[in-house]
Image (cartoon, rainbow, N blue to C red; front, side):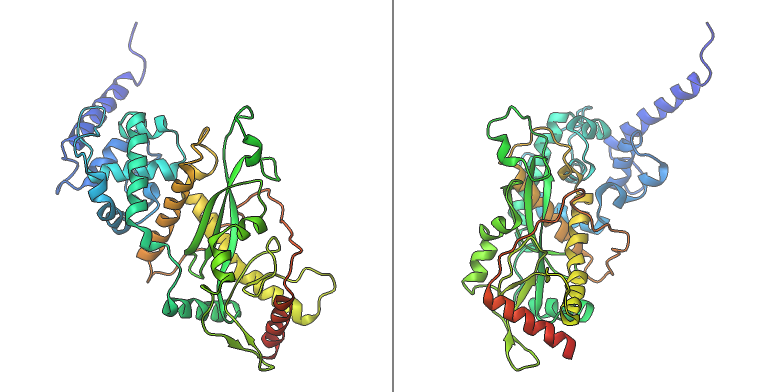
Amino acid sequence: MAPLRGAKRRKKAAAEKKAAMAAAAAGQGAPGGDWWDGFCMRMAGTLSSAEDAHRFESLFKMPRKTFNYVCSLVKDDMMVRASSYTFIDGTVLSLEDRVAVALRRLNSGGSLVTVGTSVGVNHSTVSLITWRFVEAVEARAGHHLRWPDSDEMAMIKSKFEKIHGLPNCCGVVDTTHIIMCLSSAEPNCKVWLDHEKNYSMVLQAVIDPDMRFTDIVTGWPGSMKESSILHSSGLFRLCENGARLNGSKLTVSDGSEVGEYVIGDAGYPLLPWLFTPYQENDLSELKVEFNKRHSAARTVALKALARFKDTWKFLQGEMWRPDKHKLPRIIHVCCLLHNIVIDMEEDAAMDDAHISDDHDANYRQQVCQLSDEKAVRMRDKLSEHLNSS
């Protein structure tokens, strides 16, 4: 029987791809032997178009210089056993190869098999490399996620006032659910069942006006309310004890003072250091204006969390029966990487126009009625001040 139409062409293409893979393995991707050229050749059979192969950020969700910085951070830990990880053809993975594999696992949401097949390594190698990468970032990048010092906080407060009209505001606190695929037969699975009937783990974060995380806590089950997670967090303890949000006070129009504060949605209690929106009906003009500015400032957190989950698709519920002891550490590392990308692009304008603000799709707004009497007075004083200034 005569060969099928196109069979020769496909055979030739396959041979060319095999030759390109061999060249990549030998570090002969292009003049200069750039690692990226070789990696592109390995990915040539899985990228959606030739254009994608030359768009570094489409694969790794970060510019090349940021990728190089991440490699420099984790080099010592990732290369402890330099020859322990190889491609299927036996070629040893370079540092860049290892970081690339781990980033693809975290940002593509693909399975171990899918990621491994796309770059030519066994799925077990993807798993081992990813966890080694998580441990390395956790150990080496902690300085990228910390509470701001006094000078940094002054800049944060200035931005919130200039952009959103909220003076002395130090951040936005919010939570998001990391969906998990658990079996209903698993012991204690019900504790992870949230109010929308999904199995989830909660991430609480404080976010600055540049969408950077300044404080996080995770690991709590989805069944817990926002207010309960707040009360269980180190943020609550430190703020209640005066160890945080203890900087300069704002003198308002009547001469009284309002301390530093963060803002949160209606799911949080109203506290002297955490201002929530007015919830009653028939609000006065003062309160309407406060809610308007409060809502505008809160979009920073909504966009940051939406961007975070869209970038690190591993956290979108694709993993099967995740290790609940490892997942908080993976979430933490993704938060560190989120901040690293922002820190490395500090002088560049953040293009957030296309970012959704729906990071918890189909989740209803939680409501907390708890309020501190002192906080009620302080919020009223701030509302009056906003309308008189």
